[in-house]
Length: 334
Image 1 (cartoon, rainbow, N blue to C red):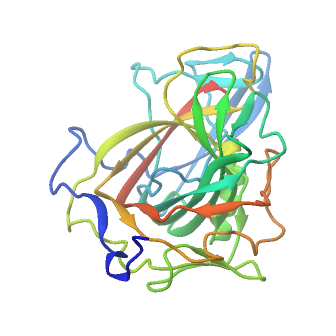
Image 2: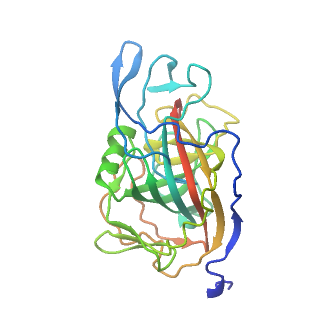
Image 3: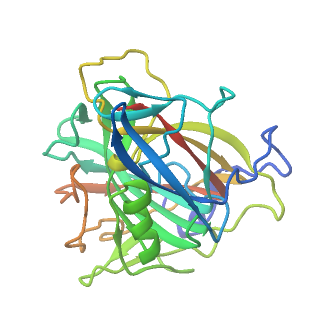
């Protein structure tokens, strides 16, 4: 067992390139909250938008997050594809746009979990071996967002496969936020099923999610999460595909396409950047990162909260500081 206490805070991999830039501006593209309400017309669904003032700028999500947002604007350049999904392939100049951004830091702990027994969504199936799949937890501290700073925890439930696009994703069955405004914006603006919970990130304690009978979440060992060099530039701009209503992050490639499957879920582009990334040995004991004490909540038509009969958190975490998440427009249907 390598879980010697002296190794608990040593990164297995530390990528903190001072001054390493992605080559293009890593500043938030937009600090506006784009509130759009879909309207049905003769040519299908379109959206009229109202720009609201926002408080913050930038993005925090990194490997997961969950967080997810659907609904969007549909001026010219959109067309209807699949079954009921408004599609925007690119902006008028041919380049994808990323109107929303968040900044902060994130921790992802993978886990072996029991595969969900029920369906996830039409055209989306769980991948498992002997009833076991890969899930985990994602903890995000948003310093800036279109609704201001807040905390978020996502219960990752399974690796899933899209029968329509033939690509893989990590699916989040439950997304919880610390702020009622963020919870409302998730559903009203983005179409993301979420729930508001009492969440706190604490400097000490085990590096995982601890729940209690009242539904509170405590995330420990957060004191060392600010590890990027002061003034470090963000780098990466890693492309990801994202279905907000499903809370799933997809590998951005589609070697085959089956138009007869799915098509109803809006698919967006994400772009992930960071100032520093590390892989850290951080084992936890029994009852940590289990989500066993949570009851109720779990809004959403897809899957819902999972009761796992088997869950073994892996003894390491992926941590990202200075993360920037940029959210793009709808470009396809899943």
